[in-house]
Length: 462
Ligand code: ADP
Image 1: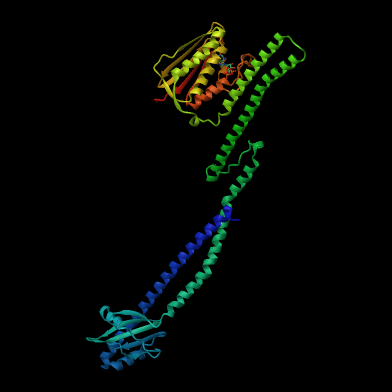
Image 2: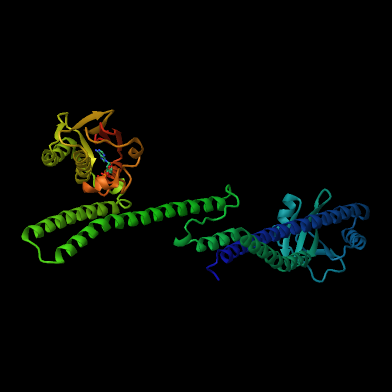
């Protein structure tokens, strides 16, 4: 039950509510207590002052202290209040009839009353106001007292209201909090149900977006984006597997066919040699494809940030690759020339990958350039970037296919390039390597005239 956000929200809400209500009740209670006391003091003081002035007036008429006291106390009767007249030493001179016992006032209170013309003291559960009597000379003090239970009564009522009211308010607030939590979380519950329904089988399904501008709408859009990316990755992977198995199927079929034919009867040594050399070629092609597939399988994992990064001298890399390709070109009767005599260009990256990319371009150039053709490789610096251009005078690539040559498994004229040993992976690997080094690769070609591949890579000193 406590794992539900709704319950936790409600409990938090109730907790905060309890604390606020208690704090509020305490504040009100102490403010009320202070105000009750102040009112009692004011009222007691005013009564004491009335007694004092009446006393002084009476004294002037009667000229006798005891008489004046009696007259005043007989005239001024206050329900629930006790009046007592005392002399300068605190000895009682007269008291109202309702006074149960003598109220003794501490001498410090008397001194204070004399000094400040009034003072208060709490004694025997009584609140007492003391006012000096003076008619030319100090005659004593008028004291008026009232029980503290008068205030206590008011506070008790207040406490009753609080003890009764706070739980009711809390109950209502908690119910309201629960309702609000339920209401605001219900779209999440619905999103949860919809998300659970989306699986690998129906990755194309999406969550409903009720209001794209509120938080939940934005969350739904983000989740839908993730589903979109997952769907694409999933489709891409399925296509990759389908294409890869298709590519592997042909050489495997050739291998099987060739061995089956060779085994049907006893053959001459030459026939066996022919068969074995064909099997060797197909096996080599298979290993190349498998190697490329391995390389591509790393692709989604090896983002640019995770590739090896070390200084690579491009002049050396291009020179090594040209030397390797020279063997193939010479076999085919194609001229291969390079211009790498610029100042040394260094970039940060993975040397093996860079070489592989250049070799793929050179390999294609040799493959698709007929005898007596020419291939030129140029390394230079362009706008602060390193630029590698591989240009050939080969068969070229039709305009429509130029956009797709960097796609996996794409080949112009499938049979033609399969005969040359390619599975359509070389350029997609090259493009991925260039991308991993934050560079660009472009093709410019005209059928029958030749092709030009241009790679630009950011250098280490940029
Ligand atoms: P492959 O392994 O088949 O060569 P690539 O990805 O390297 O695959 O190339 C894709 C296709 O682009 C090739 O099959 C070929 O048709 C075309 N292509 C690549 N480079 C050249 C080039 N220099 N001249 C003509 N066509 C090319």
